[in-house]
Length: 413
Ligand SMILES: [Zn+2]
Image (cartoon, rainbow, N blue to C red; front, side):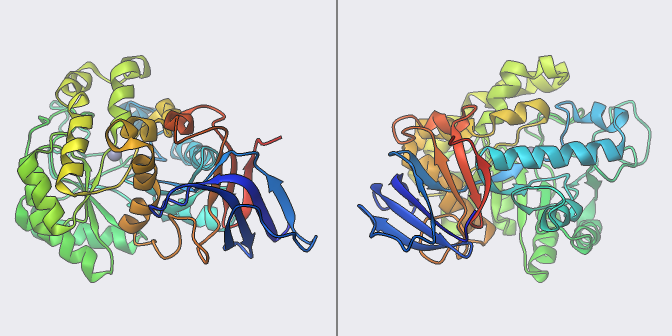
């Protein structure tokens, strides 16, 4: 594709908060060179012109919570049955598929290490901009401890390095050392497990995990390295401890109540709802081998998700967006936006997955909106996403993807 590209006759959704308009976007040297309302001036003839016939042009989507290395839905079984090399290759394929769905930036919330980021930067695989968290930190018996109650091994994993492998660390000193270890290995940010979870075999969903001292140790360690902590948490009690410790984003947050939402808003803490994963675990988890004891825990949170979003929006919490899908269910990644639209409206759901996610990642100067000077991460949806936001989750709903001005997916025909 020519260095200079004009995408015209588009319905432009800038995600800045300004109303959508009919117009054109000019891409030059990998960046957005011009944003034009109405018909553009005649070009020089040197550029490639793509006519979008009224289709929606949006900033590239951002997913703040993926697991590229969760090849199977049953993580425990994956760790026992898959070769590391097999997991690495399949994770690379998963990243390529995310980009084709229109996700031009993803934050891996545990599992992927910096090697995947390097493989993309070297062009070995075509993937989205990638921020990795390495191994999530979990307390003994916490959400990241994959041992069954009858497993007497000392370590929480099977010794693998590639996959959804966690690091068990207890006490502020071990948390500090383990966080430093992940940073040494190239993690962009640190993930901690601060409450019970669905796919962990021995904890209760309501368990408080990690003390204020342990969480503060993780936050101080991350901040000293110029980065931050994201925390898995469902209950108001666990969220409140995270906010007090200075955690930047609460992942999931399904059981959020009003007082805790207020606390998050006061501290500027981001919420990263991941509603689609609970819907799909509920509908398809058993078929993909997720154990019954995990699925039993789902009932508590599957219906609470959308309500937590309404509470968060009412309190003025900064609402970001993730998917958190595992294994084959990752193909539903884009459905998160349609689900969120039920509480935030179509534009609100799109802004969560673009502008607000960029702010969460600290990349708001570079990506997240259609504005002159930003990276030309752009997608085209095959229809009216303002009327039908679910389109972004439909197979073939995203027909064109540009990453830094480079055409990486083209089904426009
Ligand atoms: Zn997750």
